[in-house]
Image (tube, rainbow, N blue to C red):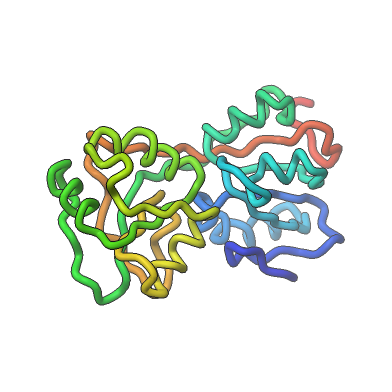
Length: 223
């Protein structure tokens, strides 16, 4: 067994099924993977990548550069990009879970007010450094939330490649606040979730599984 960057146990190259998953569904995936293996008898190899964004750690980049994957699990926004690339089996997508955006602080730090748009605006403006993933959630916050709050270019925001990077930076005291899907912020040692962002600036992400075209390992139901 090996462990991915999301802390998910995975088999080595003898796997029957290779799954590439984004961090937003990792918590639930870890919980169901053992039962899946027992129920199906399949050995699963788990790889990790960001749903969207730039750089070699995105699912899109890894597939484009030859990663052999049977199933992807990622945000609907990222899945749309892969579908446009022709990398997804038509009709194979299955929605699995949703996760709202939330804020987190380092364990022991004072919990700032974020329950209203006005309170969130003040908290973001006062933060020394804010970290968030350079994927679906971070792109939404950068492109939609911060401009709406009048903080585009003003908030001290650092976009890191993955949600796990944001959580690690916060736990290490390198930031005051982390923003991202709540599923990437809960149960992370050293940080505490403050709560969800206000509805007016909220994005509830849907995480979806789909078959990768040409994998040959599995077929959609009825195939």
